[in-house]
Length: 383
Image 1 (cartoon, rainbow, N blue to C red):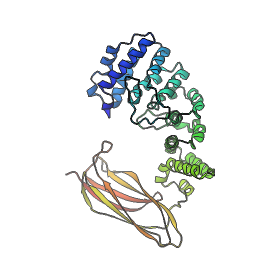
Image 2: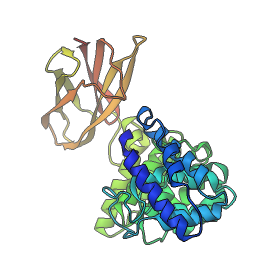
Image 3: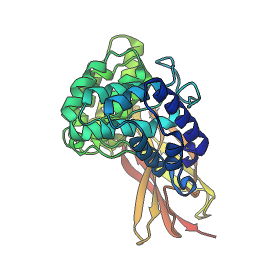
Image 4: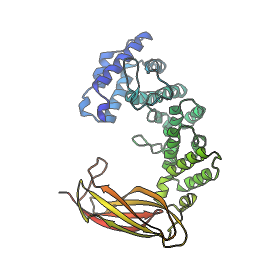
């Protein structure tokens, strides 16, 4: 992904900024910006490339923040406010896409003395990429001032702006610096999430669910209360109720995996249901890069139907010989009286950048409603 920030993109950006600067009466050093922004680019990873471009912006844009924002706003690509941003990118017509990551960082880092102007600029960039990273510079230092302004965006026509309210304030946003105060004080943003939970855009609702899931990792009791309340006050309209249920379930996924009894009960799943479980693996030894098939036999021996969530966890061997478990979603079903089913699933032990494998004993566990009910070991060979 680091090649998303490349020399041609920097050249285009410099050209657009130079043209807009000239229109506004400022001489932008196009060559100097390119030299600094593209310096040793091949040796840098994605975030380092972005940070280097941000530093170049600080060096070559006007020293007056208001003038810089005027140039950046004029340089943005004109778009439909609710357009799909997946394939949008910068061109001679204006800036959009990944180049707005370092630009939004510039806006946030340098906007401490003018929060309203900085947030208005980020509201524009988020409609052409996302400002969820840049806005955090402001939220870290002046959270209440930011939240009071962001609250006025709740009915904004653009779902990208409404999503920024939730996504930008996530305490544990991946790739981004954390917001310790929001992690400690989730009630700061909960009134806004309450309104956004039924947003007409699934894009926004999913962000709300991810934010609530972040909160659950530090405040499980609070999320158990919120989920119960949101489910108890379901909209009467069928499609709205379905959306709400989906949002709440996604928001509670960490607690469901952990077997939180309160949350499981909200969704009609009892703790430790009377289900008989047996697990078998297609092989007891595997080479790195291969897959193993899991076969899980489930039997309900009772006269009552049982609603169950089946997950599985893989216990990966660590360098010190201990094991670290990773839970994977599998299936949700209802087993009728004396019903029996067999579920099968392939799990790959493949090389990925986020995990280091160690030769030796790994484990596979079957979880029913968050509780381990069957286990097997498998030997991993590194060839």
